[in-house]
Image (tube, rainbow, N blue to C red; front, side, top):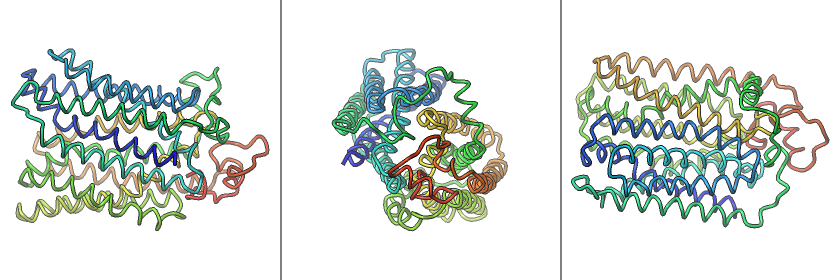
Amino acid sequence: MRTKLLILASSIGMLGWGTVLPYQYAYAADTRGWGAFAAALASTLFSVGALVAAPFAGRLSDRFNPVTVAVLAKLLAAAGVASLVWADDASTFLVGMFVFGFGLTASTPAASVLVLRWAGHGDRRKVFAYKFTAESIGMAVGAFVAGQFVDLSKANGMTLAFVAAGLGFALSAGIIQLAGIGAPADAEVDVAAGEAEPRVGTLEALRRIFAVPALRWTAVVTVTLALGFYAQFESGLPAYALTVLGTPASAIGLAAAVNCVVIVLLQVVVVRLTAHRPAGSLLMVVGGIWTLSWVVLSTAQLVSPAVASALFVTTFGIFAVGETMYAPVLNPLTASLAPKGLVGTTLGTFTAIQTTFSAVGPLVAGALLGLGLADGFLGLHLAISLVAVYGAWRLRAALRSRPAEERVGRPVTAPVTGPAAAATAAPAEPAVTAAA
């Protein structure tokens, strides 16, 4: 029941994302007349807030109750987005966007730790998959509904969107708090709050995290898969479609809708089919799907705009198939490899890594497409996707070579019973029956 409430809270929280972020650039630049620089800076500060929040919140989730961390982060996001209602100048708007990004992302590692605490080893992939699907639905519904009442011709045309987003985050916080009532204090030792060693500083924590070979390769896979699609979802790919392929703007919205629909339709099926498949192998498949998608996008330049539009929409559906494997696998795998007492810190660090490169990606795409180097744009991302395949292959090898006592993400220094003991006997490359 707790995991179901957490999934519901995640979906409602992402309504706020969908309600605001697709429209905030045009609102700041044109509606309020603050200019393109201020609008771009608002997006940047949102990402900076996310980057700062992720490792910080992950560290707090190791030291304190992750329910409290998630609730406070959601409330901070609610305050940040609601403050945009009263933003009468660019500087106030920028501060609000920073706080919004900080609060939204700060809840992510805490929510992941809660999945690990509340879901058994055998259910973690499934719960992460449903959580991802619910968030996708929340974003899509938020963007669609906001599109019906947002009026970018008026200074107060986004007031309802800001208020709705704030209420969504506040409601999400309330649901998480409700889910945490009566939760057992004696969480499993690999994800229990309060196990972080107080004398371990941030640099030492990072050293311990990246001293694990499998985590280093997981970082490579995280970066390359983020750059290979997520970094271009909102800007690079639409810009390529509009400026190079000559597709109509309606095709961009259709592609995003197809992406969401494919995820919703296939997620449950994919989770069942891949339930006992090793994580490294699945991530290799994701990298392969990313590669295929960029090949299809490359061929779209050779056909008529109508056919190119169809191929562009189809590609977003192909990307979605990979997403149904990527989302359920990556977080539980990362958590299973985390050093003792640093699960939240590890998840937060990897969230920060993904956020950083997702923010850099649009800048690279803008530079290449702005210079008319469409082939360079395609070639770069094709190469990145191939690196993801290679990284996943090396990750699979690293997982298989790990000592048996480290296969739950940390050395076992004392007898372990219950689910953790069963996980210790799992295959070397974590599958759904283990922590990954």
